[in-house]
Amino acid sequence: MRLADLVYELAKGLPDHLAREVLDFIGYLREREERGEWRDLMNAQADSLNAVWDNAEDEACNDV
Image (cartoon, rainbow, N blue to C red; front, side, top):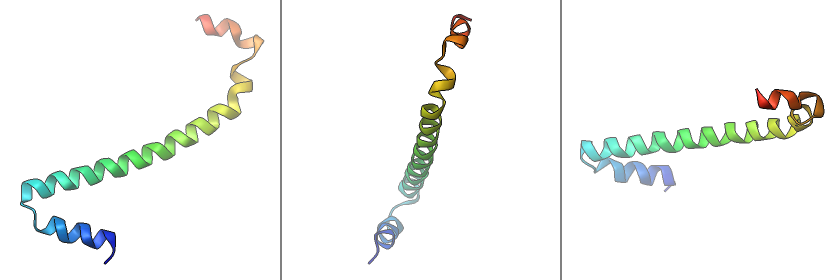
């Protein structure tokens, strides 16, 4: 039995109010995963732009 099938079988037996909590938790996990992908992308972009952001010409803008 696949893991998703096992989760489904266990969730089927829950009362509606608990099944709703499980559904909310699944949504949270999916969002957390998506945010992690975005965070990785943003970190990769930040590393590549360090030379642009950290230079003497732009130092005056840091105090604005």
